[in-house]
Image 1 (tube, rainbow, N blue to C red):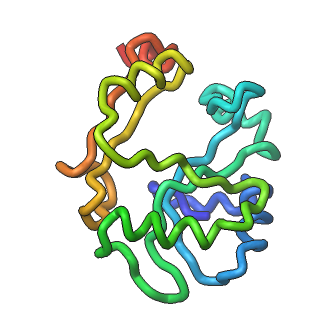
Image 2 (tube, helix red, strand yellow):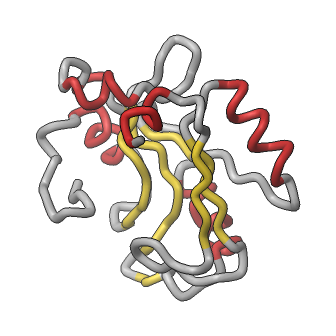
Amino acid sequence: MITRGGYNWTSRYPWIVEAARKVRQKQFELDGEAVVLGIDGISDFNALHSRKHDQEVQFCAIDILAEGGEDLRMLARSLRKTNLEPLLARRPEGVFINPFERGELGPDLFRAACKLGLERLVSKHREQPYVAGRCKYWIKVKSRQHPAIEREL
């Protein structure tokens, strides 16, 4: 498990590592987020960063970058999601797929996310290749009511 900053966190989050070992395909690379889910099923940013819950940290898979030695980054996002779903079809505990909503949901989805207490939504163009970091094909919209945003202001 290598972070965006290049740190090896394999020993830090054992549940994720154990779940990854249960995936049938032995060579794959995913992009996603380490999360601690509260009893409401919503990610708890403070619990993650407290380090008191490292045994509970799960991996929220957002994208697949490679599988079986094949680089998938140049495929359209919609095709990469199609490859991600069967890879994690057996749903090993400790890893789950981030919901992928297709279509023009915009304001309605954002309002629903704010009502649920989510921090942000990220929208990515479904026909674009994978690009590490921020790019013109994805947008992050933050809920101004979320406590994490208050810390940023």
